[in-house]
Structure formats: C-alpha cells, structure tokens
Picture (cartoon, rainbow, N blue to C red):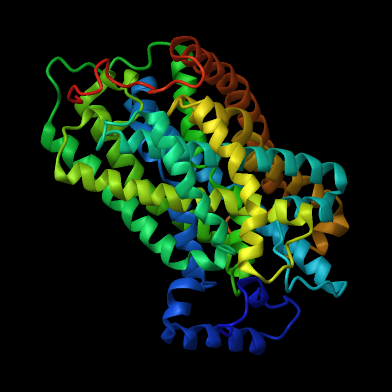
Length: 474
C-alpha cells in the first residue's frame, strides 16, 4: 500500500492467500492513515465501501422524490421506497456473490488481477459466456452513461436557483467542463474523502428539505390528490426503482476493497441509512406543497430562498460532481480496456485517454434537460434490467446445476438458507420488475418523457424556468 504505487497496484489480496497476509495488508492500510495522502486518497476498508454505497445511492434523486410522491400519493411513495430498497439490497448481494464466485474460480487458475479492475460484464463473461457479457456491457454502460447525464442536468437545474442570470443550458456547458476533471481520479480507491464528504452533503440537504418544509408549513389551499392517473403513478414508481438501483458500480467498489468478502451486507446497511434521508424529506415536502410538485420536479424550486437553501444547493452541486465521477469511472475503465490503456500507470496519460467518454454525456445533457422525467425513463428502460433482472437471472443460471451449488464459493444467506427459497425470490424479482418496472413503468415514463419533449422541445434552453428569468422563484 505504499504511497508511490498507483491505486490499481494495491488491489485486493488473492482469495487463496492466507488470512495472515490479509491482516498484514489491512494493517499496512491502518498505518498509512498517518499519511495525509493515504487518509484522503486511498481507501479499501468496509467503511469506505459503506460510504461509497450510501453516497452514490442518493444524490440528485433526493430532490425528485417529492415529485414522485405527488404522482403516487404519500402511502404508495413510502411503501415502494421500502420495497425497492429491500429489492435493491438483495440484488446487490447477488452481484457480490457472483463477483466472489468469479474471482475465486479465476484465482484457482492462477489469474492475477494486480493491474486490472474487474467489472460486472467480465463477471458475466467468466460465469455465463460472451452473450451475457454483451448484454451486461450494453445495459451497464448505457445506464452509467445516462446516470452521468442526469447528474449534469441536476447541476444546471440546482445552480439556477442561486443564480438565474444564466439559463440552465449555459450552466450545463459550464458544469460539463467541471465534471470532466473526474478523469484524473484513478479508481474507487481514491474516493475515500469524497464519499465521506458526499454523504455529509446529502445528509444536510435531506434534513434541510425536511425541516424547511415543516417550518414553512402547508401552502394555502394545498391538495394531495395523487394518484390521479396511472401514467403518473407508474412514472413515480420507476423513479423510486431508479433511486434504489444505484448499484451498477457494485463490482468496482468491491474490487477496491481489501477484503471484498465483507461487502455482502454493506449495501443493505447503506440503504437503511438512506431511508433516514429519503423518507422524511420526500414526505415533508409533499405534505407542505402537495400537488404543486407535479409541475416542479426539483424540490428546491418551491422552497423560499434563504442562506440555508443556498448552502443545500451548493452542497448538492459538489455531491453531484462526486456522483458524476462514481457513474463515469466504470465507463472510463471500459474505454481504457477498449483502447488498451487500462494497465498504464501514468495518471495523466489515462486522463487524456478518458476525455472522449465525457463528450457524449455533455451532449446528451444538453439535448434532454428534463430533470425528473429522465430519471423515470432511465429507471424503467435501463435500471430494471441492469441492477434487478440481469443479476437475478445470472445468479439462477450460475447455480442451476447441483454441482455448481455444491461447489459455490458463497452459500445461501443465513436468513434464506434454502436454494429453493433463493430461486423463488429471484424469480419473483424478475417477473415483478419486468412487468411493473419495465412494462408499466416503461409505458408511463416514456409517455411522460415524450410529453416533456413536445412541451419544451429538445435542446430546451431553460427547462421548467419561470416565464421571466428575473422574477422570484416560488
């Protein structure tokens, strides 16, 4: 773990190495804490993974959940948050099991991953073959691409509530350039301080939304009529599915851990903390503003301007920059592997190689600036497969034979010790998410998305801005 080495050189110890060697590695990590560089830059503990998962799971979506509540109603909003949170934690667990299975099989063949970051599509390739690799790569990359686009759109949407002298499209240009600097962050090892700060920023924003809404009280004549239309109900539901489907980077976070076997329940623990942010804030804002939220997908737009709100906006901007890096880093890895630069030790050379990844993200954020509706569309069409259906199917197919189940590197969890029960849960997830998430959610979210295109047009200069830019925001 010495300082001069690149992050990827200090990758996870082999599963087949002794426990004593692992302890030495972790001990080195502990000693390196006294180095400022290691403290801020190099993380691989279970705590780092928890911060990464929790920080990455909820960012700009925190601001759109009240909008989803107005589409679905309070009760459905709360129930579906808990439901999809549990579902997401289960499929993140499945991904971690498949990673360990793949890693253990490869290391029995003496394959070294010293300068190589394992990714989800490689796990699918190793366990199920090239067809699954292609499917995993297509869905994962497209989801992460649009996940990065959403963060960029959110940056422009948020800063507008502090400074409306520039329109949202111009702010997108500016933040696109700022977010391009994430090409200099080598891997998930190097997000230690950013994950910690990012979660702190999200926590502040969530509790600001909660307290500010309660202090503001209900607006005059407030109504809570949701759900009124099926199309709105399922649009809101897929935004919540998107919220708890942020584990497209699970494999990369695991690979950055010193002991990836410890990851199994980290995502669930991260989700439990995220509930303390999403449930109170969404419920409070919806209680205060009700159906007004149907035309205000960003919760900031309804709260009165104050120093507290401005602080929340600035903190969310910084956090969105961090989350942009989280979503883009796996894309950087894929691109490096395509052009043969993944093993290069020079950070600057890799940064130059990564820049072409940012350009299409920038362009798409300018074409589709629909903050809120784009979340639901991505949730239905991409998240449903990437982080729910594909992991559940892959797990079932990997362990379909009795010999595979017998030799499994990870047995079924203690709370679900039967393989039959595991298969039953996985089958339920595949059917539910395909029918409700992809089918009904896809229909509803695309109907809503097309409506936004018809209303505002592509390349909209200032999506959902007041008619007069100088007028005060409600």
